[in-house]
Length: 233
Image 1 (tube, rainbow, N blue to C red):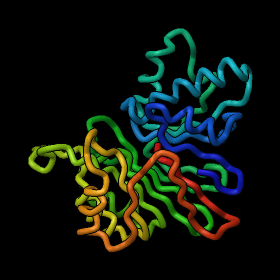
Image 2 (tube, rainbow, N blue to C red):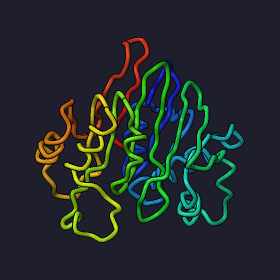
Image 3 (cartoon, rainbow, N blue to C red):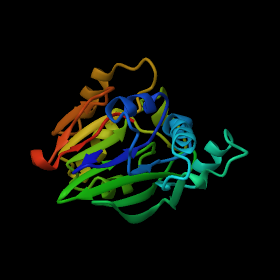
């Protein structure tokens, strides 16, 4: 996200760092938010660490907002270096003022601690579920959001599992409707799934615009001179 020049990154999964550098070649970001420790959401945080640790030794710490487990996961790749030399860590769930944003992290059900993220600035709200099972907290997280990014894994047999830690596209649409969100973006597609079919399934529950997350997709929120841009994690 880029808001009046303040750059905040939401999740850094596989191969996201090269895309980030394609947009911001200097790698100069202001804050990072990670929803949970699974590698498809945090593994390129390691690449960012090495870039800053070796490329800007002694530079200012980068604010990092994340649940327990994220730093342990990345630390396994750097056992001889203190990650706090690069990152100023703030625990999630929790609420913070981050540059121009009010950031709130709410606990959502998953296989590991996961924080759904809500970011607000100047009357504009973006919400992101990370990975989650069905929960009424999603309606609170995405309440009246201008854009609600919701995982839509659609894993076979998901709705029959006794404990739910992931969503279907239809459920993503349901919770976006319950939240009163203006736009819905589906993400976290199971490998091989038809994204157009996922969008169609979500539209059965949600009457607003439904987007499928795609690499380098840009969405502008708010008036043009105060644009928030979001790219697929």
